[in-house]
Length: 306
Image (cartoon, rainbow, N blue to C red; front, side, top):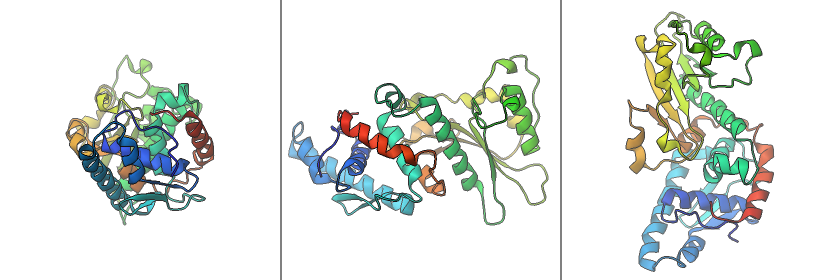
């Protein structure tokens, strides 16, 4: 493996180092990277006694990803060597790659410094993928769940339904439950913190169903994200209804040591990169796969640590 980009700035973080190995495998001409190459670079800063436990942690992290995600994981790993399964076709794996690039590069840096995407469009695409995840997660053998990407600017909606007030009416019609509250400030709102909603209907079509209300955070400041979805309480009567589940979607891999940051009920069910990749492996990636060669080319040219 020829190392294509520098070690991450946080060079003792197993999550960042695992991401770095995955990125280098994508950039490498042989489509692989190894923990031995990682150790060689770490020797510049750390002693062998520091490196070996870190290398073990990184190996465990990669093995865990492979186990959790299954065929939606684009790499194979034998404990030392990480390889792309199929460099020519990433069928069922575009979701993971999308989340990896957004997490590794950063929403703003990818837009302003590397100029490989529009941050607003990428955020919107992440919401779209999260909407698929929510629907798939709530679906069961007997009933397919439904979902709606509600977050502003609702670019794929009909123009006349995009304003927040009109969007609430569309939502009310689709879910056939709850009520829109009268609030003079609704004309000033975009989405009141609600990015996606999914619901599972009973076959009888009657009221009282299961809802998943989701908030998305694609940027690297996701740990500081507030529960903005609380604002929706002022505009819609969800909180008076049964069967509400809150959720939080991020394209980053979240270590279990950070799990308490997202603990329910403050944030809701956490969907990190592995969970999103698993539940959205049917996403065809059409809006992203054509960007991959350009992203790889610019990262190779950039070479710096991220």
